[in-house]
Length: 292
Image (cartoon, rainbow, N blue to C red; front, side, top):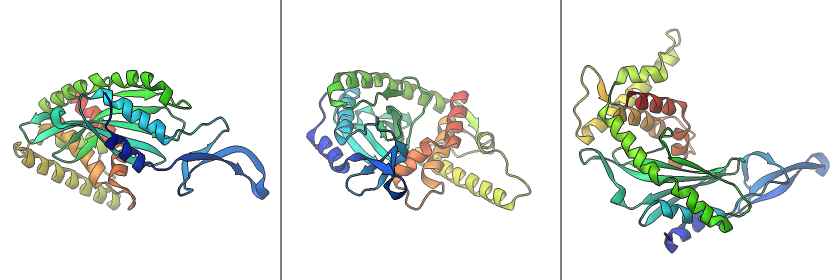
């Protein structure tokens, strides 16, 4: 299925620069075997280190090829949200026909296909995740079968379009599997206090700072959880602290995405990426899936 010109134009506009490879010199312009990657618009260094002469940086056209191939996953129009952080990240959103009710009509999820094209030497990847409108969480559940594919980083992706489309087609079952996992999580209960203890443990009783940080984090997560219980029409949390595994996971993920202390320069998309790698979020996923 073809992607609209507006989507392609928006991606090209967001990534209106290239990343080029230049030799790195030692003292007195001494020649070295290493190269660095730099944006051609700002000269800002890109990546987490040097590369060799064999490294071929991908281009904006390569990213656009990935976006075009992703249209095969969804039967309908798509929108693209772009972000650059030592690599290209694109969040693909289909139309609202893919909406999935989790609880009543106020707790819904929508699929998001996340494309990652970094300059760290790893394969490109695409993953199916969800956007939860109740709390604005954007998250991947990494344990869901068929939710992630790896894409070879070749010299030019355009001639490989048929291969790309075939690779992306493997994600079609990812959204179906994710919906089933969310349903199971919603139907299982956890004790929220035990859930948090399993993730964060107990603070050192001899450290006032550790106790303060633990208390503030717990209060923030419970405040988020209680607000989401109310806004979704769920019952208030009782003295037994029983909530659905789905609600528990999103409270922890939402804290990591929205409330955790981050660099003051961190954008909303930076926070999504940081939360996706947060070990506490990964632990919360593991516990929620174990309960389900």
